[in-house]
Amino acid sequence: MKQKRTIYFNDTRHFFLYTLEPPLAMEDIWRPVDEAAGTCVDTFVYSVEGGGGLFYPSKVGRRFGGIDDGKRGSYAWRAWKSLQDLDERGLDILEVLIRRAHARGMDFFASLRMATYYGMDPALLVANGGKGLGAAEVRDYQFEILRELATSYDTQGVELDLAAPGGTAWFFPQGEGEVYAPVMTSYLGEIAAMVRGRPGAPGVVGVRVYPTEEMCLRHGLDVRAWFAAGVVDWVMPMVYPYFVLDGDMPIEWLTAAAAAAGVSVYGRLQPWIRDESTGAPQRIHADTETLRGAACNFLAKGVDGLYTHSMSWPLGDKERSILSELGDGERMLQGDKRYVLRRRHEEVAALGYDALLPFEIPAPDPQKRYPVPFYIADDIEKAGERIRRITLKLGICYTAAADRYTLLLNGVSLNAEVCLKKPRDPLYPYEGLELELHLESGWLHQGRNLLEIALDGRPEGLEDCGVSIETIEIFVGYGTHPGGLSPRPGTESPHVF
Image 1 (cartoon, one colour):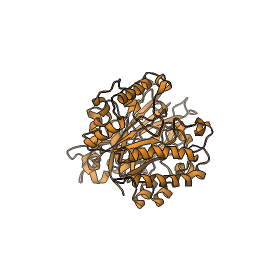
Image 2 (cartoon, one colour):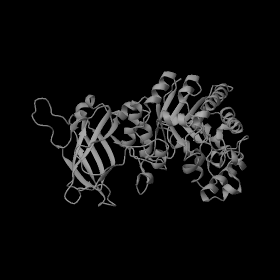
Image 3 (tube, rainbow, N blue to C red):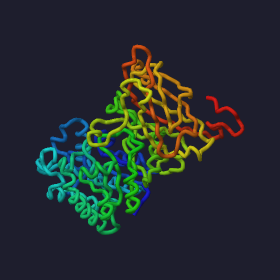
Image 4 (tube, rainbow, N blue to C red):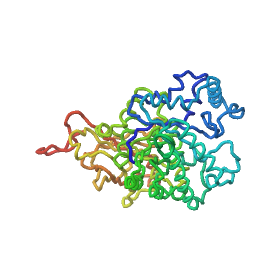
């Protein structure tokens, strides 16, 4: 049964056990829950394993701890020492968090990385030549941990983390995913029967999957077969190494199939708009307008809620304000939005999830147009004169101010528009320019749009050189009073910027 949710995820480590100094006061233990409580977040998802054992006093699986873990560094020591102290105080960290989440009005899901099973024979790991979840003993081991999480704790259910690689390891050997897809479907059926059939209220089964159907099938995740068999309750599409906000994730296939099956889909809002993988010198957290744009795109594509994590920590007024908006789609639609097109991440591209940006225009050619499709959730026509500003920004490397371009938006030329130019990167102002164009409202459509770029000519001495289109973003700004970007009836000239 589909259910609307606003989800915040904590991975236990980065903004909790690896960071807070032991011994933990109760306020410290409650912190992962409390920092999201009182917003629109109604569901808290908590990772119970980080590659080195379980972060709770499991009776069936290997716990995080021991001298090897304690010596990995100060961050791992903090986690190990905190868990040891809690044992001595008779506190089960998972139980404390669950009770706190329920007291603060949130459902609680335990998330388990399905491809790491610390404590078993290392030869079973795919990285060491093993079969991973293709081996029955690995599936049995993980099943017992899931049983413990679903039946020994008062969780609302479990999330199976099948995203790989990066944050977790491969769960099936590469190239054998299609062979093991029926095994995974059957395994999920066993898990679903156990979770839903537990004593008391039936539990819920969520699964992390890939954004495209081709990626899912290649790696053994036959999502349509899961829907047909009724073995999952919700799915969340993602690619692990990519933490840069992807507001145009191609998930229409997933939301359509899930809607027909009565399964929920939750859109993942990654925390950054730039990081080292995109050529930025450091990670840059997404601002409110950019998160709002991505959230509205997801909702327009049919998701049943939003799923976010790793916001700038500790969460302050800005982050809590964003979390308060995520559960109110109507409010977000009426706010300013920035749509930032996704850039290529080489590791993710190798998995089959590539991006258009950046791309090279090798030399001037007025006849060669480079298409850039993008999606926006704003109903420009309906908003009318409430829209006060629409801008298109292009970050272009190796360009000169004298370069000549043709820009078409949905077939309409933008060449007559005012174009403001400035260095695209203040640290390296000589490497390129940012072009900012102010647009008329009638040129954008709700849904899919198409920008076409051509490099018509370059000044003498640069005729044989190319440029690189690095970044593209669209800003849609609203006002409280009518203003409009289009001519008013009866006027002869357009709005002047």
